[in-house]
Amino acid sequence: MRRRFLLPGLLAASVACLGAETAAPPTPPEKAPAAAPASASAPAPEEDSYQATLLFTRVVELIRQDYVDGQKIAYKDLIYAALRGMLSSLDPHSQFLDEDAFAEMQRDTKGEFTGLGLILGTKDSALIVISALEGTPGYRAGIMPGDRILKINETSTERLPYAAAVKALRGKRGEKVRMTLYRAPAKPPAKGAIADGDAPENIYEVEMTRELIKVSTVKEVKLLPPETAGDEKIGYLRLEQFGENSVAEFDKALDELQKQGARALVLDLRNDPGGLIDAAVDIAGEFLPPGTVVVSTQGRTEDSRREYRSRRDHPPVTYPLVVLVNGFSASGSEIVAGALQDLKRAVIVGETTFGKGSVQSVVSLGNGIGVRLTTAKYYTPNHRVIHEKGVEPDIAAPITAAEERNLIRLRSPALLTAEEKVSLRGVRDSQLERGVAALRGILIHGERAKAAPAPAASPAAPMAPAPSPAPAAATP
Image (cartoon, rainbow, N blue to C red; front, top):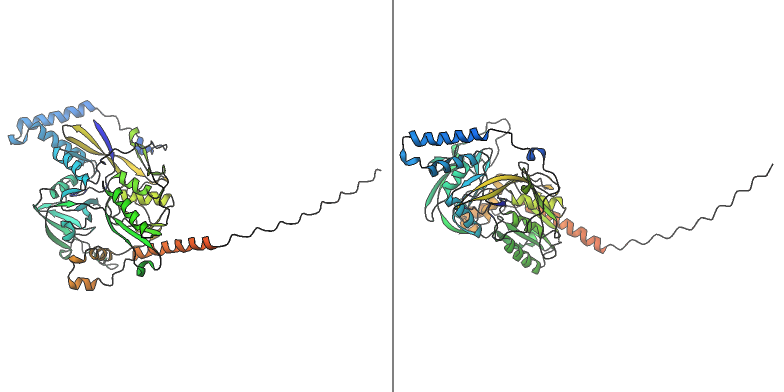
């Protein structure tokens, strides 16, 4: 069997690159010196494996002997169904990969795929949208981060396994998919009021057609305008996810901003669901000396305990950096934010991140099938666990769900009606403004420190005269 360690973000309904391997094998990470937590390294309790295996075999043979429908009792179908159930019972991110799923996972890392452009996750046992990639059917349909998926076509998602929900949203180019979703009200209920739950006015339906989607992960590379940045040249770029092409796109974007004279940078990771661990490590490494630990992983087995270090072959970017995050920044986004925060290389602004910090390994079983298995958790350089905790910002800047939706809608003015454009004219990005204020303060402090004259050396204090020797005592 061939094992490959991966760090998926939240699995995409149409973007399997979250959790897929990179095209070229990375430099083997070093093993982490820290011992794994006791809970992670504890061996499985002893069981009678023979009796358990015998039970499984007896049930399979019973089905083959007595089940009424003879078209459903092929060994392959029964074993595949059992494997799907076994893996999905562990956690939402472990999965049996049959021939189609395994091949699709390998294709989708190339930055081009067929689907809806929706990134899915689970929260509080519900299937939710983490992000809708710009320019995709899901984005044009107005689906927003945090929307809960209630139905896919006519199938309820209430008891639908996560992998089955993802598969239901996949399919051939040109096919239609109908979804029923729930969106939380823009304003929380007043204190003492009864929440409206799944009120009809908060439930909506959309019908979308699957398309061939080309993913460009780096967005909005620009110098911020004077009304936002004042006289300072502050660069801005947004990373939509960590894919196979992200590092090359990121390098190109930084070069463009440096040619324009950028003296500081805002890296926007809001609603970025994560992706390839190598891309996250390399992008964090843009701002760190080579060989710096960016993230470590720890699980029950020896080969799951690793350190991933920055490995860029050029000097790191040294100008001031702010990273914007929110509750839908997950996985790879949390690696970057957590590392740059721990190493005091960036100021993190926004809201506590999603808290997706488990590592999946894809194990090839041969014959075009495999399993995706959760094998470890990842830790920041200061050994903070992120799974189910998230990264807390240095500067808290919460915004409402309605404000967040307005900011997303502003990214595509062509999709807005004339009335919507008027209503959104005064919308401000308060999180970006807080980040820019932090950068301007850093720049001003740096300029003043350079301009301040060196403190004059203090004059040497005159030497005190040597004390006179005490008179000798008279000899009696």
